[in-house]
Image (cartoon, rainbow over all chains, first blue to last red; front, side, top):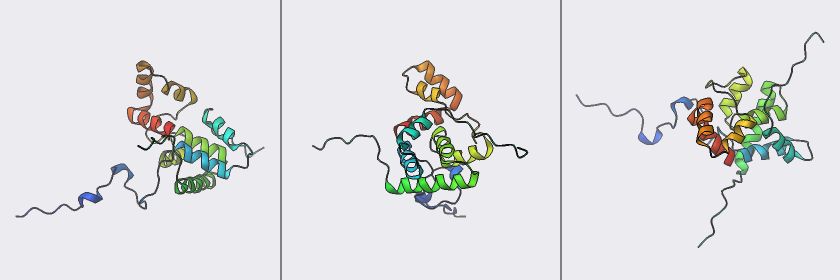
Length: 71
Length: 104
C-alpha cells in the first residue's frame, strides 16, 4: 500500500501551532515599542504625547479603579 | 560601501495604522482609556493576544507576571544572576521577547 501524501504542503506549515486561529496573512500580532509610541501619539490629545508615553513606559501598570454603582 | 543604517526602528505606516486600530478596538472592547490600553501593551511586550487576555482576565495567559519598571531596569544589567532571576520569573522565551521589544 502506497503511503499517503502529506496533507499539508511544506510551504504552508504554520509558524506556531498556538497561533493557529484564522488570521489574514501579514497581520501583525506583536507591535514594536516604536509602533505603539506612534499609535499613542496619533490617538492622544496631549500636547506632549511623547513624554506621556515615556511616563507610561516608566511606571507600573495598574487597572483603573472602578466606581461603585451605589455611589 | 554603504554606511550601516541605525537599528533604531522606524515603524512602517501600515504597522502604526494597525496598532492604532487595535488600540482603539481594545479601548472600546474593555471600556478603558488610551493610557491604560497603551500601558497594558507596553507591559505585555506589545503582544496583541497576551494584552487582550490580560485586560480581560487581569492575568497573563501563560501564567507569568507582566513586566514592571524595575524588571526592565534589571533587564539592562549585564549580570548573569539578575538575568537568571528574570528568566525564573518570566520564562526564557518572555525574556528574549522583552529584549527584542525594548529594541523595537
